Length: 247
Image (tube, rainbow, N blue to C red):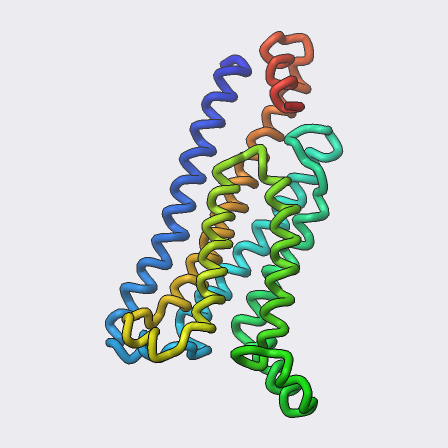
């Protein structure tokens, strides 16, 4: 099989692995929602509760996203050294991985909620700094840091648009989950929006995991093409593939 045939076969295989992995990630969330529906209306009416199945599930998705981001760092570093794959700043993936690992710990341990309670009781003036709850300062800070990191990581993922789309979906769902904290509980119950925050957080993590996974698979495919090109430096198709890699 020539290099073009290998490239087509690899591309098909990567697409299939990516699509099935994404289906598995979202399918797990749908199954979790289906299982929790048997708990009855009480589960979803317990709006804003911590330590539920969905907080554990969200933490798991954040851990997956962090692990995949570490893999993306390794792949991006390879492309950075070779000058291929459109890589700009490989270290961004380390920042992203650290952010998601912290998010997983925060989701399970309620870190920023506990910090808000401590500051609220220790500093009388702190209550004047928040609008809805004592963790507002931390939530806003997280949002600013996430926005800055998102600009950097989106520039890295720009060559593979499907990853960008999934990342944007994740950001939208995360923003939706954050905004639910500022909707009065009476409106939540009247509009039957119970459980939206939990679902949004979970599928935000799923979308980020899918985004990074698809990017990593595509950059791995390019690394394989790069390796094949290095084995056939005089083959015209290899030269074309090398030019495509640099683009």
